[in-house]
Every structure is written in structure tokens, then in C-alpha cells.
Image (cartoon, rainbow, N blue to C red):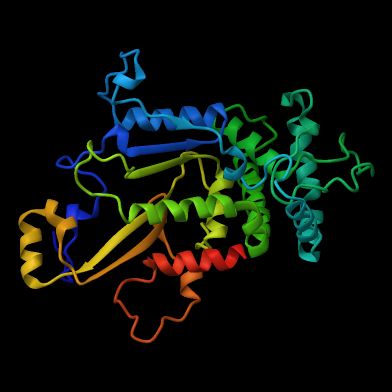
Length: 353
């Protein structure tokens, strides 16, 4: 199908269609080792393959079986406990001590204490010992200082406040003293704090580089993935990572993507697409329009691969590419959110050094 610019979009730009269905063997799934992320991706797989036969007790005889790899949790979140490197821990503390961060935290402290006190009856044993969130380490330096008439001297970390209030809100279990505006204020400040830290390239690299490199390697593998023969070929068409909102924020910052106005909500998804662009002759285009399955056999003289990012369906440009001047004669006429794979690879490798 051709667009108004005369560009031919094979399969209407879709990864799979009724004519070329996605087979379970063509999916690779990786999840953090948390029940909620595993259950989330299980629900997604059921939605993709609602008619699959799950009554076969022999996995090797069941084509519908999709393994979920949970071995890589520590590289899929930016704030594992403990941190993967001492350098990340030190850098987080350094960034948290910047004057504008300290000033903002001081302005929000009374609110944080009030929210923490409002949740006190619903907190389990050991809640004060839990620490997660980039930039939350070391926030308790003044925890022993009495603070007005508050019952507590130290508020819960912002990431913890955001997670708890969000969960309570969707279940309609918020305490009467916490309003929806309060929940939004907590989420906004937590998001601000995460982005203020992870937009710092060295920290984004320390926190997310292993996962970023894994994704880029998958994109390169995809260049050689056959588009037809879905059952005979083993190479995955679709890689699914089931993780957390903090993972999304970490990837947005690591790829230097345009940040969303709101913290990613439940069921948010970041889509990374590999797009193959071929320059073909008029005769080849006519043949492709007749039979799109011959796309992989085109004798094209020019083939390039591009990467496109989108969050919840909204396409996001990357500053990694926008800040780079195109080489002379490299104007391919494609929108700026179409990032050449070789450019993305080189920039990610530069960030990793």
C-alpha cells in the first residue's frame, strides 16, 4: 500500500497480519522476576493467542508454549538493591546533593511527611526499611531531627509514596485525608526527581547500559530476520520485555527520548521498531504491489535500517539523533524520529565508553 508521498508500505507497516500471522515460536519474552510483571506478560500472551491449545502437558509438543526468561532482573531496573556498581551509588548521592534538588526537597518535605503519616495505618512491618528509587539513597541524613508536630521524623521515599498511593487509588482504598490531587502531586514530583537524575548521561549509562546494549543487539539481529516463513524460521520477530515504570523512565533517558508530561501509568509500553527502507525501481515496486511476500527477494540497490520509538502510541524523537548534524548528502527525506540504526549504534557505543 502506497502513501501520499508514493512510499510503498509492505504489510501496511505492520509486523504481522492475518496473511502473515505471528507464531508463538517467533516471540522472545524477558521479564523481571516479580509476580506482577510475569502475570502482566502472561495476560498479554493470552491476548495475542487466545485460541492456543494450553491443554497439552508436553511443552515440547505444544507450539503455543512461550518461555518467560526471568534471569535478567538486575539489568532491567535502574535501581537494583544493591546497585550493580559502587560508581552508580556514589553518582546518585552526588546528583541528589545539587542545590536545586535540595531546595525542592525542602519545599516538599512537609507534604511528604503529611502523606506518610496519612498512610501509617496501612504500612506493614519493615516499610521504613525499604528503599528504592534512583536518587533516594542517603535522603535520611536529617532523619533524627524532630519536625514540628508530625508523628514521624522521616518521610517515605518519593518512589515508595508514589507506588503505594497509586495502588491504593486504583483500588479505591485511599485514606480520606489523601486526595487525587495529592496522588498526582506525589507522582509528578517523583517523576521530576527520577528524570533530574537519569537525564544525566553518565548515570543513565551506569543504570541502563546493559539493557540498552541488549536492545540494540536485538535490532541488529532483526536485520537478518526473514519476513516470511514464520514457522520454519526460528529467529524472533517480536521481543517483549515486561518490567516497571522505572524501566521505562530509564530507557527514555538512556535513549534521550522526549520525556512524557506524566509519569508512565499502568500498562504503559515503549515500542522500539526496526524499519527497513529500500529504494526500488518502478518495475520492482509494481511487482511488490502484486505480491508483498517477495519483499525479501528484492534486488534493491539501497537498503537502510531505521529505529523508531513510541510511548503508548505516541512517537518520540531522540535527542541522540536530533543533536547530530546530518552528513552532507545524507538527507533521506525521512522524519527526524526515524533514526538510522548505524547512528543509534554508534551513539550508544560512545555513551558506553
